[in-house]
Structures are given as structure tokens and as C-alpha cells.
Amino acid sequence: MYTKYIKRWIDFILSLIALIILSPIFLIVALLVRFKLGSPVIFKQERPGLHENIFTLYKFRTMTDARDNQGNLLPDNLRLTKFGKLLRSTSLDELPELFNILKGDMSIVGPRPLLVKYLPLYNEHQRHRHNVRPGFTGWAQCNGRNAISWEDKFNLDVYYVEHVSFVLDLRIIFKTIKIVVLRQGISSATSATMEEFKGSV
Image (cartoon, rainbow, N blue to C red; front, side):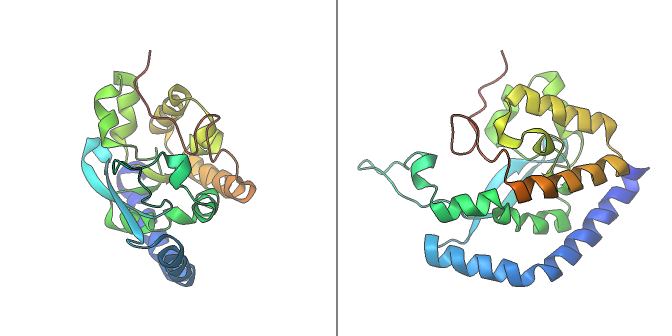
């Protein structure tokens, strides 16, 4: 009942309210991104959503377009600026995802939408993470974020899918607020963001 009918309405109403209330912050961040990182201000990328249907994810840009002599983009840690790190640590870079929630591509709570190229690498257990809409935040984000292994992250995602409820969603939202304030789990131990997923052993 909650997953089929109530959750989507809550997502729509809360994302609309958040967009209205946070519009001044949205504008300020957009102007800062334009000034410090250039254009485009919004980073767009295709991601798999509910039932692995592809949608366009919106985020604020956090990296430069710096390239080497051959024209290839430099590694993430060289393109991620101090300002970009600040946006990520405060999750301000994810504010445009509120439009994805409003459209129905995403939910406030659910497994984070990952890269399309990972789809063939999931095992049957991990693939269940796509049985619900991807989220702005999720159970894995509350239990380590980018500081835990891919396997642990996927296990937490599937746990959420199998136990989704209004009470669990509230718990995740409150834990997310705490994590963002304390800036926990932003990076993995060996990467500026998160290592590339290459499949489970």
C-alpha cells in the first residue's frame, strides 16, 4: 500500500515544497558554479531507474574539464576542485535531483542511481536494487556512504527494497541529515569519490 500509492505522493509534495523553500540556495549555488567552474552549470548523465529504465539525472557540476595533452579528461581527483569538494560534502551538488523526484524518475529514499555501464555487472541479488525508484538518499548512504565496499552497499540497497516502509524512510531521512552535517563517508579510502564497480567476485 505504502510503496504503490502513498510513497509517490509524499515524494511529489515534499520535493515541490523543498524546491520552493530552497530556491534561493539553488540560485546562489548555480551562480557560484557558473563563476568558479564555468558552464554548463547542471551536470546531466543517464542513469538506470525503476525496472532499469534509463532517465537523465541532474546534479550541479563539481569538476572542471581539465584535460591532458592528448585531450583526455584528467583523473577525478585532479578535476575535483576545493569548491567541488565542498558541494559534495554538503550534498548541495544533488539539489537538482529534486526535479528528478518531482518528475517521478526518483524517490526521496531509495538506492542511489548508479552508472548505466554497471547494469551487466550485477548478479541476480544486486539487480533487485532496481525494483524500487532510486533515491536522493538511501539505506547505504546512512551506513557508510562511499566509505564501504560495493558488496556491502548493494546488500544494504537490497535490504531496503525488501523492507521498505514509511518508518524506515523516516529513519533514513533523519540519519541522512546527521551524516550530511557531520560530512561522513564522502570519499572512499582510495578515491576522491568512489572506485569504479567492476563486478562481484
